[in-house]
Amino acid sequence: MRNDIFQKLIYQLVSKFFVFPIYKFVFKGHLIGRDNIPQKESFIMVSNHGSLLDPPLLGHALGRNISFMAKAELFKIPFIGFVIKACGAYPVKRGIADKNTIKMACKKLSNNNCIGIFIDGTRQKNGRVNKPKQGAALLAFKNQKLLLPVAIVNSHRLIKFKFCIPFFSKIVIKVGKPVQPPKSSSRDDLNSITLRLKDNINNLIG
Image (cartoon, rainbow, N blue to C red):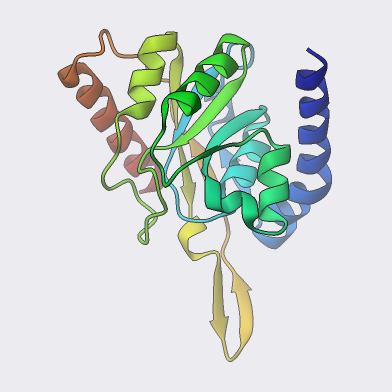
C-alpha cells in the first residue's frame, strides 16, 4: 500500500515538473477526447508507438497513472529510464511479454491501476499501427477491463533539422471511445478486437 502511494506521488511530481514542460512548451501538446477517458475504473490503454517519449507524454496527457510495458533497454537510457521507471513502467524483453510481465500487468489491473500497451510491440517508422499483437486483447479478457484506443500523432517525427536548427513537431493525442474486452480467448475473438483497435487508432491518426 505504501509503495503504491509513494509511486503515485513520484508519478505526479515527474509528470508536473519534468514531463509537463516538454509536452506543453516544447511540443505544444494538445489532447482531444478527454471525455472518453474512464475516471474511476482501471483500463488498458492501447496506442501506436513512434518515439521513446511516448510513455511519459501519454501518461501525462491522459491524467491517469498509467504503467507501461517498456522494452528493458529503455531503462538503461539516462533521463528516459528515470522517467519511465518513476511512472510505474515495467520491463519486457524486446516487446515479448513473459509470464512474469503478464502477472505484473494483471496485478496492477486488479489493484485498479491502469496499464499502457503499444499494440505493435515496438516503434513504427510511419507512426501508425501496422502489425498489432493480440496481447492487449488477451489481458482485457483475462481481467475483464476496457480497452482505450489512443493515437499519439507526430511522435515518430518529433524533431526535424533545417540548417542545423531543430524544429519541433506539435504533438496531438486523440482518445477514442473505450472498447469492450473480447467475449472469449479464442483466436478469432482476440483477432477481431485487435483489428478493431488497429482501425480505431489509425482512424484517429487520420
